[in-house]
Image (cartoon, rainbow, N blue to C red; front, side, top):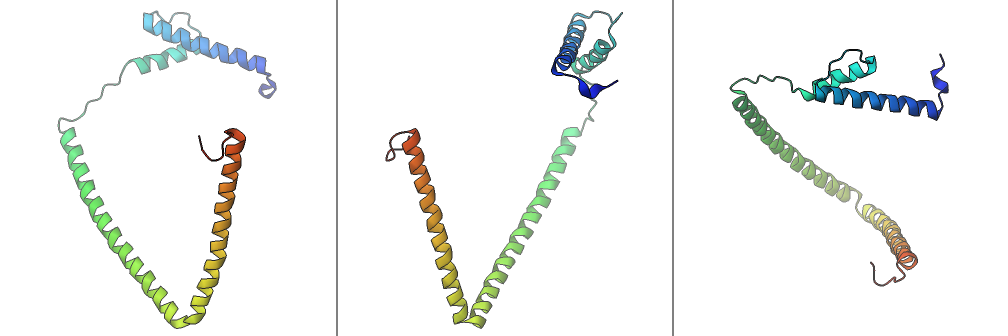
Length: 153
């Protein structure tokens, strides 16, 4: 059997058969019609329809809500400790970054300032170019689509 060579028509027929089997199973379950002589495909979908229709019995312990609340409080307090530790570590990281930057600036002196100045000029020019292109393309879009470049829609 060559399943890979099905054309769209055969697939549509199979999908329609599946759909009809699902609908028949739902109808039969809703009406309480017996399963005598059922198509195996319909019988399979009847099992699914029955499982979806009947909620499973759930027997929660009497103190379930109290246990969940206790677990939530315990998790909240541990999350608070984690948040405080994270804040402390973040502050230490910022202090280390500032100290290392200050030490590098003191060690390299004027060379560092000249390099920073050159980088800022280069990046500033790149930023200005990006902003100008963004504004220009937005202006052209407004002219093309809205007809009024000065009053955006």
